[in-house]
Length: 134
Image 1: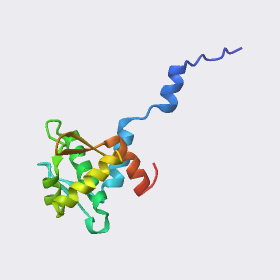
Image 2: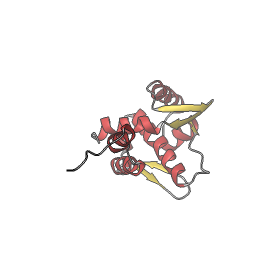
Image 3: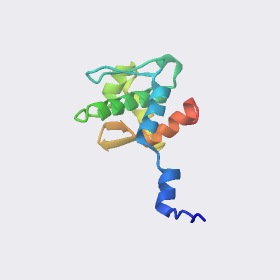
Image 4: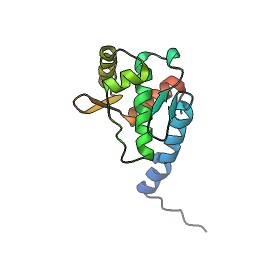
């Protein structure tokens, strides 16, 4: 006669709720690959920019900066509106307005005045809604 296996709540949580970070990153990277290009010096290029809403292009740029920081921990993943505007060919004031919209949506954080970074946990949700669920 076999005895039932005692599975603790912790084991059940690990089995059903834990997600491997590699799975999360791989899913994001595959979906964003057609839109983001990184160079070894940290330059981010957003491809297909003309097909995107301005706020989406900004968010992709910030996500690229955040991904580069994952490869180079000493890199700064915060940028100012001027850098974003220059990189994407946008008007700085319009860029600031879109950044404020993204902040209100929780997709972008501003850890210091005038500096912005992507909130990667929320970017994952955004990617799911824009490019198909996980």
